[in-house]
Every structure is written in structure tokens, then in C-alpha cells.
Image 1 (cartoon, rainbow, N blue to C red):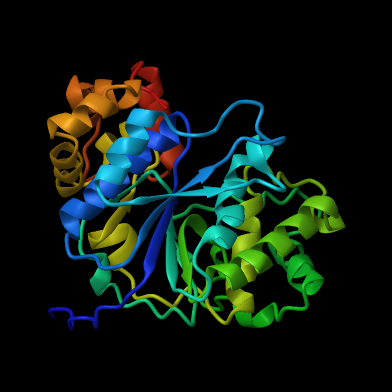
Image 2 (image 1 turned 180 degrees about the vertical axis):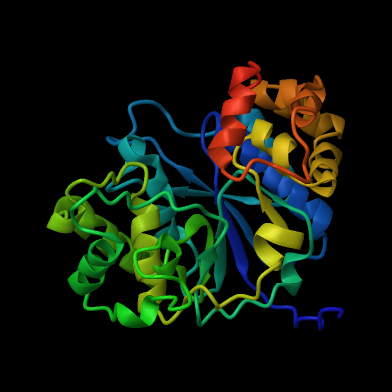
Length: 333
């Protein structure tokens, strides 16, 4: 059955761009947005951390990357790191939110994302936030004969006065990771970035500074943002069912993570989008400054990676795909 056309909505998009990999990925994101969603009416922000005490080196993008992004109509949005910076760069997605226009709906995407369809047709309910369900059970890792999933997650809901029971997926068995609300932070959205960002920061700093005893054996680096995100979403009345499946991380966007993984497992349509938006000479000249793009997209290494796998019968776990690519000497990040 064909999808019922969704009412187009007005919202802003934000990604991170900084020196190195994220700047080049940001350029590809914006190019793919303009290609796949040419009539998008919202503002597109590339949030850029500024030099400061928390950055030992200048985190700003190179001039040619910045100019190429602005030529595609995106706005560079400077923000200052007050709490995370270089020591926990994933904190950028938390701290940038206060620099966005207050009271305007937003969607955050990780920079390593391609837009493959019309984002304006995605039926967001900006009153009920959600995030990416394209994830594996990466956190927590309960120790044997000690606290389990339930006790670990419940301790954090209790910390912030949230109702734990209503967050559970009761169709999944007790102590199975998918029973508990857990997202990949590759995208998230809400009606106001300032409200969402303030709570995201509050919860993240609370857990970082005063780790609950139930988390004593758990790693929070690099997981802090993904540990806190479900709590923030639940606190605003959102959840795993707030957005119909099949749009984001589906027909409309692809969170590819790294270029060898993109070629190994994504659809032919995603690869076609990547190679189409990377083809214009003005963009190619800039993207060639990043070796993984140059080798995978322009010099054919990506196709060699793709030939290692049957895309209709991929290994079940992402780590198995990564290990195969590494064993062939094709891994690049």
C-alpha cells in the first residue's frame, strides 16, 4: 500500500562540522540534501565549535570546506564548548543546541549521514521527540553475577524522577537489551532546541560528575550521549514509537558511519547518491582533501570493499563486517 503523503512541515536541520573528517562529511551531507530534497524550505546549520580552553587545536573547518558548504546555502553556526570539547567531542551535539534559534523545531543529524529522499515529507511530531533505532546492544555491558540491565537503567530513571516502567517494551523479555529504551544518537528532534539541549546537558553532566553506583563497571566514553538521550526523550513524552519506521535510516536518510561500511552494506541507491553528489568538480576538488573519500569514492577502493560481501546476506553483527574489511587492508576512517 502506498504511503499517504505527509503534510510538509517547516523545521531546521543541524549537523556538526569541524576540522578533519567531520567537515568533509558535512559537505557531503549538505550536497546530498540539496540533491535529494531541493525544495527544503528550512534553514540548514553546520555547527562549528570555536577555539577555546577545551580545544588544544583549532577545531574550525578549512576555508575551502567552509566555502563549499556555504555555496550550497548552509549557514555556519559557531558555538563555544563550555563542558566537553576535545575530551568528549560527542558532547558537541549537546552544546550546539543552545546556539540554534529558540522555539523553532529542529532535527539533528550526525555528519556521517546522506539524505536520500525528501525530508520535508517525513511525518515528524515535534511534540514527541525520538531518535535512531538503527543500533545494536552496545550499552550497558552488565557484569556476570551483578547488576543487570533493569537495575542499571532504572537507577538513571530514578536519578531524574522519571517513570521507568512506562519506558519498557514489554514485548521483549526481561534482561534483554531491547526491552529498555535505547537509541543511536545519529538523529534526534524536538520542537525547541533550547529546551531539549538544556535537559540533555543537565542529565549528561549529572551522570558524568556523579556516576550512579549501578554504573560503576560501565564505560561512559564514548557512550555518555547515547546513555542520556533515552532519558531526555522519555522526559519530554517521546519514545521508540514516535516516528513511523522506514523514513529516517530508511528511504530518506542513511547513517553510513564510515565509507568502507557504506560500500560494504548500504544499498545501490545510497552509493549512487554518494557518487552523484560527489561528482561536480567544485565539490570533488574539496573532497579529495580527505583521503578516505578520495580512495573509496574517486579511486575505486569502495567497490573493492563491496565485492567482499553479499549485500543480501551480510554478517549479522556490524563488528564482523568491520573485521573482514580490516583483514583485507581496506579499513579507513
